[in-house]
Length: 119
Image 1 (spheres, rainbow, N blue to C red):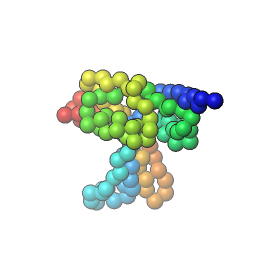
Image 2 (image 1 turned 90 degrees about the horizontal axis):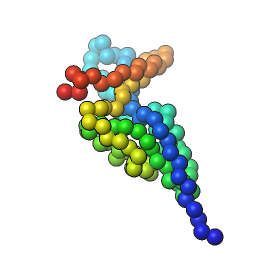
Image 3 (image 1 turned 180 degrees about the vertical axis):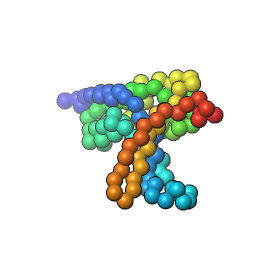
Image 4 (image 1 turned 60 degrees about the vertical axis):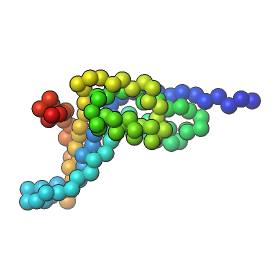
C-alpha cells in the first residue's frame, strides 16, 4: 500500500519576541534574547516535529520585505514548515512583543513597529 502524506495548514501571526531579566535596566545596559514566537507558530512547529513523516505542515501568514521577515522564513524552513503560502507584503513588518522578567514574575507587552521605528 502506498504511503500518502497529508497536508496541514496553520494560519496566524508569528511575532518577534524580546525577552530577558530587566531588574538592572535602570542602572546599566542589559542583554536581551531575540526569538520568534506566538501561539500558531509554536503549535505548527510542535505539530511538524511530531508528525514529520505523515504530514506536510504549511504556515500561512503575511510578512514584510525586511531582514527579520527574511530570517523568519528561514526559521520556518529550518523547522520543516512549508512556506508556499506565505505572502510578502511591501511596507509591512512582523509584530513585536516583549517578555520582561524580574525576581518575582514575568509580564508580556505587545507592540507594533511604527514607520519611524522601521527606519
